[in-house]
Image 1 (cartoon, rainbow, N blue to C red):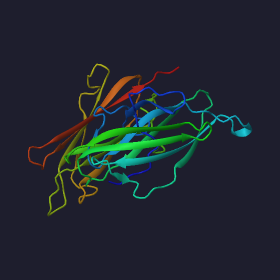
Image 2 (image 1 turned 120 degrees about the vertical axis):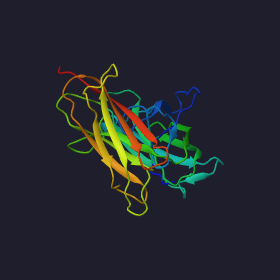
Image 3 (image 1 turned 90 degrees about the vertical axis):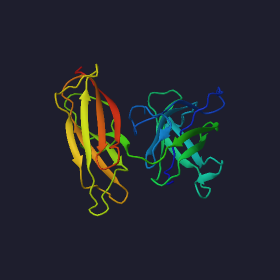
Image 4 (image 1 turned 135 degrees about the vertical axis):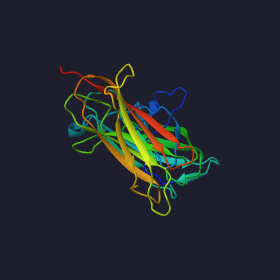
Length: 276
């Protein structure tokens, strides 16, 4: 399992006192700024495990030019089912961070993520986080469990991006903006002689009532995979909303070479705001 630094990702049902840092509104999301995952805390090997949350009970700085900054440090450990730390391999220093919050309050919206390798063993894992507020000295230590499923045909790492910059985008926009829906099709069948595959893709856009907005869906096919050895292929679908409303992008993939022709699917809600 290969891991990137977590910026936080735990929740406890126990009450948190004002003398401790709090982790509120913790939810697994489809990337940074994305909607909540329907699969909750269950992931496929190779997926990006991403949590968004609000870090509460922070104290902002009050000194001159740096007034209004949150300064904090975080460390994280990942434990396997035997309660053994598998990340980091060697103890390291906490990650020092700061954020400017001009609207005041004691809450900082932030996130946490890690990458899993396709060869990770299925099972239960735990992320353990410790956070220290460098201004007040308050601390918080919490844990979050997640499950890795067996490897199978699926769609990994869905996220919405701004088309012009490639930066993460929220699931909301206005008519005239340009976005890209990004995802990875994984674990399809590859012909060992030709390194080719046969995966059908269908993208249907639905309105608020679940009805297709166009008579025909957008269709594509993967025949030459981006990475035949690892059986991965990344897709970017251009999305340019032209009218206001509540919509859902429904993505379906069919592995035509595999036995039983398995299907993988995900949906991504998107709000298009009207002119104001």
